[in-house]
Image (cartoon, rainbow, N blue to C red; front, side, top):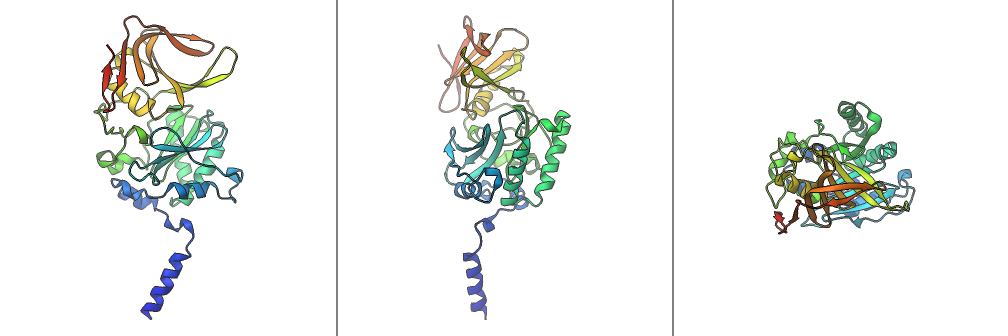
Length: 320
């Protein structure tokens, strides 16, 4: 009898649907220090997106493409992307996943719908409850829930308003589970709330209690004189005293590098109009004069500026 029952059990496993492998969000959270628990694969994610019965994906096949170091992305519709952050050692394993609307919240309902599908598919107990909590957090941060853009994965979510990340404490905050202790997070996997400082595996970053200078970054489009789009860039307004070497290194490793889709990254000093920091093509220029023309910024003065590059081992090196 035992042999018969064992055989039936094996048959059930063999014919189980593909999503029966699901990782429970609750179980994953309880052992969050072990990144091996995040074990759904890029192929499973691809199958989920390509499901023909999903009205939210327009019944079109989407393919993940490499998007910067350590991640893959697929474009769902205009300015809506899914970013899958993959494990360095097992390139097929998904480390975490973000669903991002880069169109200032215009696709919020779309984001919420596909987020519900994702959370349901990959193990959340109550997708509607998670969405509701996200709305509550957005009101607390910004006062206007309609501006919230929701980014989900199966262990945590963060909230972004028009390109500006807000630090939001919530029931899914990884700080509750000490993810900062053993969590192998680097600039390649900058996908969790800023309530926990990402630990870069190459360098010493500022203390966890220190606010990131890129917390108030906004994204704008750069257009040439003819009106053709050249790309997007991020712009930050902070005091020059905040642009220490440690903060600039943190900014470059944990913000500039992961956002390789931005052509330029600019910091404008709030205490010295027309001056700031400029980064492009792996170079950082500090205390440069910046001018604006046709809606885009460019370097106007370099007298007295300091130019850096970041070495392969994650150190800020001055260009002599």
